Length: 199
Image (tube, rainbow, N blue to C red; front, side, top):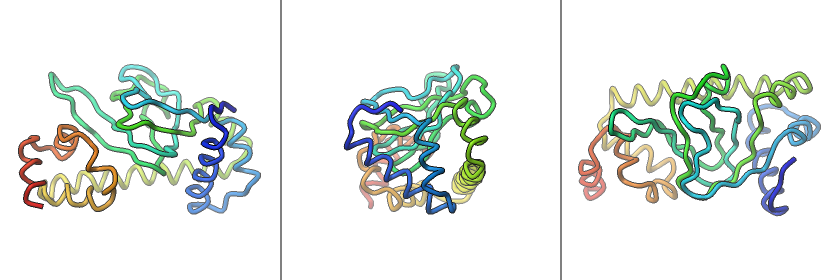
């Protein structure tokens, strides 16, 4: 177990337990098994959790902060998704298959995480099968989120997409740079600026 601040570490344990136990009937013993293999890790704003082209070795649980998944297309920096406090994040395809990541993840604020290495997660599955259930739930959540985003892009206006994001994470969205939000919504920054003024 790696820890840099005792109080922050215990906060992170409580946050992780709260999220996981609302999704499955996992026991304190199961949680303890996970904590034996997990690491507490903090990142400064602007740090890369995952680099494009490199293999994703970790699954992260965000204790506090905001991260962004992104990739470059020609000279454009395109936001794929944002991840907030209480959510899991990883370049899942790379993490699951241990192949080079097709996009990167960066921190938009200082971020505190609990993370587990791919090889240690495999050990955890063998030690506590309930974590395979959690992994399935996470995969299902990712599929739902991806489907909802595609549906949103095809059926909703940029204003509607922005309002949904704002309603879900009001304390964070105001602090995400305009250019990142605009690329996520698939519009120009000036168009998003006009939407904000109208609202």
